[in-house]
Image 1: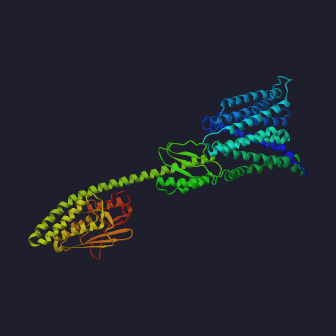
Image 2: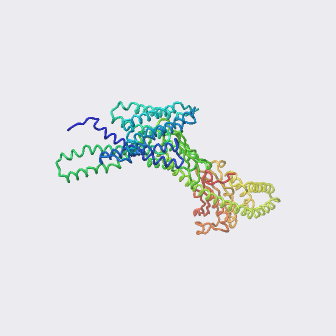
Image 3: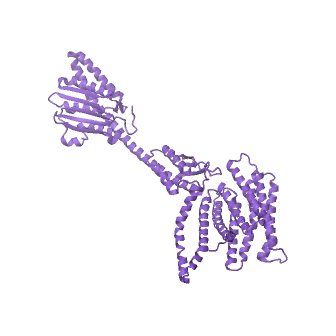
Length: 638
């Protein structure tokens, strides 16, 4: 096999670099024009957009001329016209661009303005000899290519040196570290630019041509990396790298595959078929190659730990189960910090305003809910990794939309819970009104019966009458004191029940016996006011009072670790079997229904009131089971 020296591959490398520049600057031109029209250009304004378009036009025309010379055997004047015009416009545009961006930091502005104008004039004057010979042929006596090439190199060298001097003499006050880095790298690029065009004549022609095509890549790289990062850099670098790799693979294929197929000695049509089919693996592997190459660039060059799909899954799964907006903002900021590798903050403020992304290297996006701003996400500049680019900003905007969706769900859930709580509060207020009406109905009868009992005791048992008066005062004092408070200590409730039963015992004499037993500390337990009192009153009034034999009322309290069990027993006739599963809405079930609805309003399904019958002792049992941790809705604890 014959081996060729490295210089033999220089034309192929030059064509590949030129083709890469065509793709790169075509993309840059599109994004620059789009962003300038949207007033999102960070640096250079319309001049930078013009410069990018002119560079793209230059490489397109140059590549077209090369292909025309290779396959058509002559050059087209229209391509020559665009190539000459574009390459002579680049030097003054670059100087104008640097002057425009550093104008506020420069001294002797008049001198620099004159320099820009002079360079535009020189470019027009130097372009005439080359335009005369290459395109129009106006004056045959004018010097041609021998003069045009040195003039162009001199013009590019002057532009590079002048641009470097603009950057060198600019002295902004309180310049940021980012500005200093950008300024230093641009000076390096200007120095390399000047060196290539000043001393390129001493290099081989192909190497000189390749270097002149690489300089614009370096210039665009620095500008996009340090300034126009959100616009296109990461997209261009990934797609451009893929195009460059594809061109390289195809060029390598076309260099190596045909000789190998020719050595097989196949017929023409068979060889053509084999040659065509051998391209399929490259074509089929192209999507996989693009994904793999993009992932490699993201991970090793752009400092991205997650793909967009992985980042979205990690972000949303980490926010499941959050119960309030404050915790949601905290968790979202923590997950965004992990995703982007830099400190993130989430501000859920309806009055937040977007902070325009500046050159400090941070990202800021608004959180919008139904078109209205509900907050802001800000990710600070990375300290060591690559700067944030357009895909980072797009990912952050997508995650902000996901966060807005979670906020909407959280607010709808809070709204629904608030509505349910409001309904429970209305139900409790209605039950309170019913309870007050029940008290107003019961207390007069109880008072009259107690007064009659006291009047009967005074002649025969004055001491007992005095005790009954004190018990009556305690019952009414408790009733009046707790009439506006929904929650009381269990010990207070039991003292009121004991006083009530003493009064009823004085009324019924030996026909009523009662017992109150409690296990545990009753001082630290709170219950709805009058809950046990209502059960006991119901047992006395509807159970014991109607008996023709001595009545028994028993109150048992069992305090567990997490719940409270209350049982009120009496040896009355009890309820019908059908009423045990369903409480009546009137008569002797009115007070019990009120207690049950209050418990349901406070505790939901965690509390219940049941009615049963102890067959062995022939006693009716009304029991309450409720948590000891307080209500699940916002009730006044009193």
